[in-house]
Image (cartoon, rainbow, N blue to C red; front, side):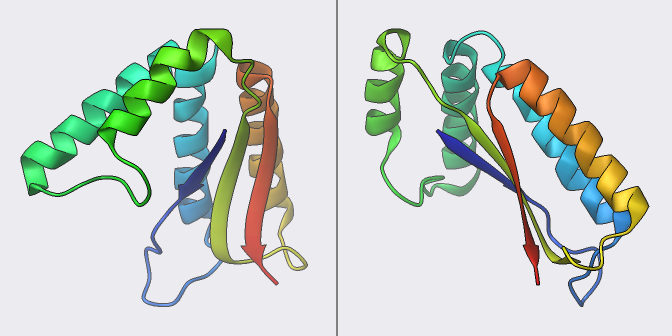
Length: 127
């Protein structure tokens, strides 16, 4: 299971602003709790969010699939051994030109997410 956390830019131009990186790292860290012991809390959380989105907008929160597919997967979850990958997408941040503050922030987020989820952690950047 791959969960991607992304953050809109606080400026008209995407960039490597530390404030944006704090936001997306926080998303990943807060989201880790839903995957700490089993997948059941994650599926319950997703079900609640999907239903709230539909009530609010009348549309589907899914890019692919639907609520029925999510519920089928949730029913099978206790028999599955999940491999979880958490991805932070911070487009506009340059991997080659990362600052020490950005790298420390990413290292802290990675350590926490890996410890809680026992899964992998990836960062997507520009260049």
